[in-house]
Length: 134
View (tube, rainbow, N blue to C red):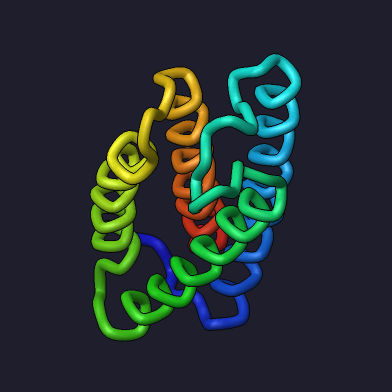
């Protein structure tokens, strides 16, 4: 059985996960932008292409929110990691459709790169929370 962890341990795990996902997603952004998979002709917001600022915000904010949600599961349930893992994986799977549904004329390769970035954020949070619970 995994031990209960406190808020400080959870936020620390979330911060480490957000740093790792920020580094990986930034590298993915720069690599795929340089080879032309991520282009400035596809607008993720009205008349705004994807920038590194979007990557930074999207890598840090959801990870820290997820850590806070995990804290609530940890505080009020006995099987917190299992429940959180299921919720996180369901939300991750749902997020895989958002690049294709939310952005008009999304090229397939561009959408796949954004999906990989979503997976990086979710899996890094799950990994570091599980590691903190051991």
